[in-house]
Image (cartoon, rainbow, N blue to C red; front, side, top):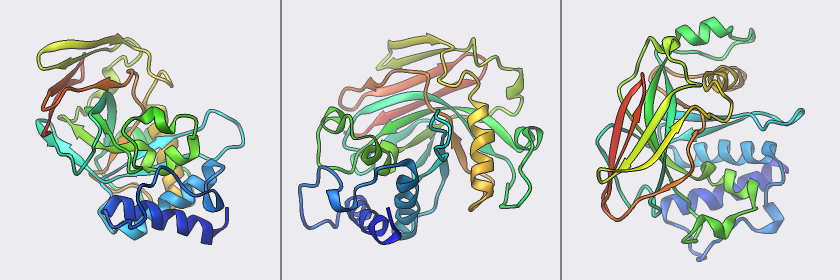
Length: 258
C-alpha cells in the first residue's frame, strides 16, 4: 500500500469517527485502498491520529506472532476512570472484556538505543481495566466483518476505549500466570478465569511495544499501554453495570449509559 492509498483509507475512517461520512452505509474499506498487511494497517492508524487531532491517551500493543511481520501500535483515544460511563457516542456496541494494562509513570521518548527490560519495568505500573469494543463501520454485529482481519485492525483495532482502575506500582509481585479475574454484570458473575493471558506474561507486550514506539513517537507519562485480554468477549445488557476483580491487582467498574 502506498501513502496515497493509506491516506484515503484514513480519510474514510476519520470521517466515520467524526460522523461526517456522506456516503453511508460504509461496511468496510473499498477494495482499491483496502489494507492487505499489518504494515498497511499501521500507515492507516498513523493517518487516523493526524486527521482526528485528538489526544492519544494510550496505545494498544501487538506483535503478530509471525516472524517477519512488523509489530503494531494503535492509539487509544478514550480512557475513563473506574466508575466511568460508556456512552453511545463512544461505542454502539455493548461488548467488553477485562484486561491488564500498564501506565507509563515517566516519559519513554524516542531514541536510537533500545530500552532495556528493567528500564521499561521501572517506568511503568500495572492496573486493572475494562476495554469496551466499538466499530465505526455500519454493522450491528462484529460477525458481519469476521475474517476481514486488516480492515478490523484498521478500524482502530475495534476499540472504543478503556476504563482503568487504580495503578499498582509493585506489579512484579503479581503472578499473572495464576491471576484469577472475576467479571460481573449487574451483580452476577459472567466470567471467572485464572491465568490464560495470550502471551502468558502481559508485560512482554509492553516491553516490545515501548521499543516499537521508541523508533517512532515514544511513550508519554500517563499513557495507558494495553496488553490484550485473557477473557472471551462479554456482552452487556442495556444500562448494565460491569465490573472486574483482578486477584492481587485490583478492581474496576463501568456502566453503560444506553
